[in-house]
Length: 253
Image (cartoon, rainbow, N blue to C red; front, side, top):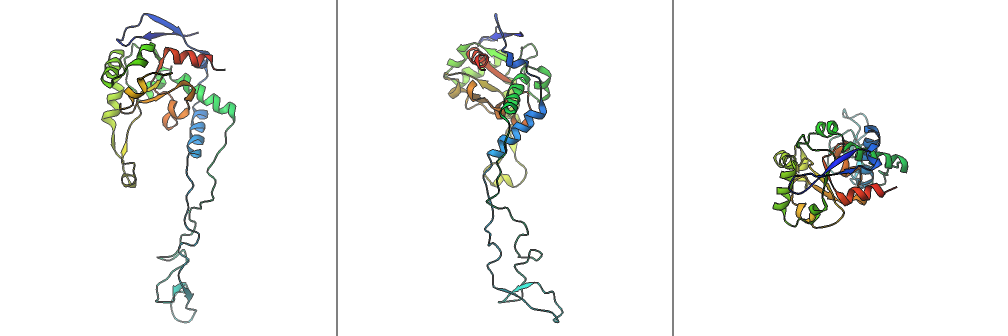
């Protein structure tokens, strides 16, 4: 079994802990990507056009022999309508509201994806490749003492993260926030923000005190899924586990 350090809130480490067997799972980026795509597909909301859109005009064909195309035209004018091939006509293949976006995935395959993404958090090469910044001396995954859960103020969380050696990754997310290119700017998703730390904590005040940090997510161990561990389908997120959260992961069958 692999031993990793347990870090205090002041950055020191005097104890070690054995990682659960789940961290020995083979790295499977193909299964992780598939699980992420299925999860996002199942979150999609159905949408579609009115089946009669573009077909509500009074139209008629002018017939042949007049030296003009025989597309349907408005009866109150000569403007073409109805046909998909004309300006102002209906869409040829509009989105339909009855389309089923749901996808299925085997339970064992889904479990393998989650366990593989968990194991990837302990691989420095994969975490660095994903772009995260942290102290090279740290052992991954980062395990902190349960005192970390009881921090009530955001400024104290920042101090603890800085002393442990991972606050540079939060700064990376703050500096990386930028305005989205394209129409999404006017549709409620103006900014794109990089993902930073994932804090896995069993309980305590850390959820409220860390919630305002840019790019940081807080989740309980029994709620961990592929979206937390591999945002965008790319595994290797920089993750902080509390001691009690690691023990709970080890007790899962």
